[in-house]
Image (cartoon, rainbow, N blue to C red):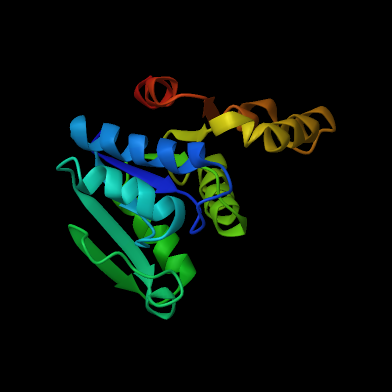
Length: 178
């Protein structure tokens, strides 16, 4: 495993623990020779994880649609910045570059990215590990919703199991390396 795709918010959230854990994840990736693949922004959770990688000697590859360069305030210190035309191209390029996927707290964009890659996994378009970094129980309501989907017959148990959950960096990386 060489490259980890991290989906996360362009906002920092309202509790320090989110940014701290994003930075610590980035530092862990760098110190353990994982390359970061991410959305290319320098603000919010994206900026925190990228800074954690870069300030610890790692590689960070950003993938950003041209129209988002100003909105997301692209990171100017990356190892590489790949520009694409559309959001779909962004997701496809990031997935293609990555060996595993981590979703951290974020908003609609983060969930869109996560669910598209979950759907691709369900359709056997890739077999990459997908893990939620459940900082401070952030994803607990989503996990409950997915269990409801299984209970009511809208999601197969085998598809529910495509998504792993880790509450700490150590647990998260253990799930990826299984």
